[in-house]
Image (cartoon, rainbow, N blue to C red):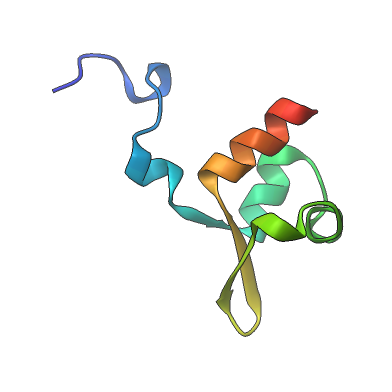
Amino acid sequence: MDDLPKSDRKPSWIELEAVKPLLEVSRITSLSADTLTRRYPEYIVQLSPRRLGIKLRHILEITNRR
């Protein structure tokens, strides 16, 4: 098992594939949900008819671009 605290290690591949709701993504990236859907439509995942999300690996890409 990994001895590093959870905050000091890289996310596993399964964590990178996890889809986060757009509201949470908005808090992480400090971009509005509207801006995220306009600027990054290729990353949007339809969770349900009214809910959108983005995979963690794409969230990290967005935050690194800024």
